[in-house]
Length: 78
Image (cartoon, rainbow, N blue to C red):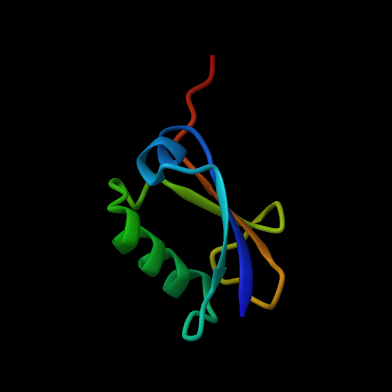
């Protein structure tokens, strides 16, 4: 399955890129994809990083061909 992955803020710096296309055989859930990406790029604070699928935050989303996945660092507001 081919997915478009986007990285923002410190995550883009850590990964060394802002977006990429990944062909994945085994990841059909967001949790599995997150595990693969965090392992590859050594992202820290897995509990505070949010992941959006097609611009929607949904931890239980099943992935499908062509989905856009955004990895979002913690945000501070004020």
